[in-house]
Length: 198
Ligand code: DAK
Image (cartoon, rainbow, N blue to C red; front, side):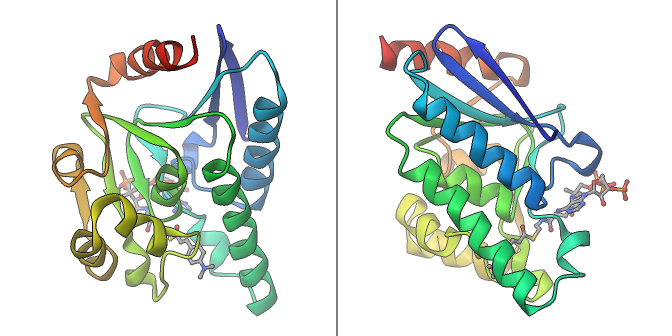
């Protein structure tokens, strides 16, 4: 099991729990994430959903690079479609989905955050679309969502530069809504979620 789910009042906290790989996503992680989001959307007692990562180092460090290296054409396509299914589900959720970005949000991890309706980060959070360094493009909707959120110029810079930015820069360019101390991140988001769902 790569997902931990807990309920704080009417807020569902869905945690990607693969800390030894900085919460990188393989197909099992994506399937479990999908199923847990669906069950939270369908639960009438839940008003908002938070997605975060286990540990204090990473939100999600991307798609699983070690796995991707081994994929053939068909496997690569299936992995791409699966990631898009998850990001589309998040974006189209009838309940607000908030990313609690508690560390690295890279590649597909940044794309999961981009699909969320709101993004709150801890001070140690780091963001990037480093796919270009692997000969890829962001394939789970990042090329479309990033310019809508931060504008075309900043988006192109991040996508073709492949560099990593810190939480202050992410706040400056509008990639995140707010930045908190790491130990306050979840409590702050839960308080906000309660305001918007009460
Ligand atoms: N995949 C697999 N394992 C990962 C990983 C990842 N993305 N990120 C980290 N890990 C693993 C490391 O391999 C290491 O495992 P062991 O070697 O100990 O077994 C463990 O997590 C701890 O990482 P480090 O030892 O490297 O930790 P550091 O603090 O030194 O460095 C780091 C942290 C985040 C800077 C570094 O781990 C790193 O650079 N990681 C890779 C980040 C990255 O490049 N992410 C983007 C992945 S590409 C597409 C669909 C989807 C995608 C693309 C196309 N199409 C449909 C076209 C998606 C692409 C991606 O997401």
